[in-house]
Amino acid sequence: MARFKPGDLVRIKSHTHEEGMPDHRVAIIVEAEDAYQGEVFSVLFLGTDKPMRFHQMFLEPFTIS
Image (cartoon, rainbow, N blue to C red; front, side, top):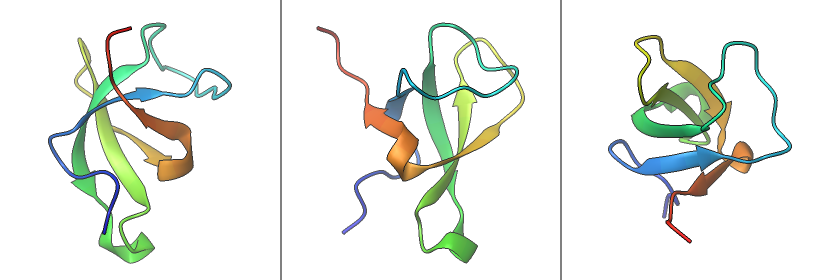
C-alpha cells in the first residue's frame, strides 16, 4: 500500500535542498508518477504555481507539532 497519495499534505524533509523550494517546505501531492511505481510524486508548494518532483524518501506527512 502506498504511503502517500494525491491530496495528501506533506513537508519536505529538512536535509533536502532543491532550487526554488520555499522555506516553509509544505506542499500538497498533486500526482503520483506511474513510471516510478508511485515512489515519485509531483508536489505543489503552498503559495506557488509550479509543481516539483520528489521521491517519497524526501517526504513526510505534515503534522502540526
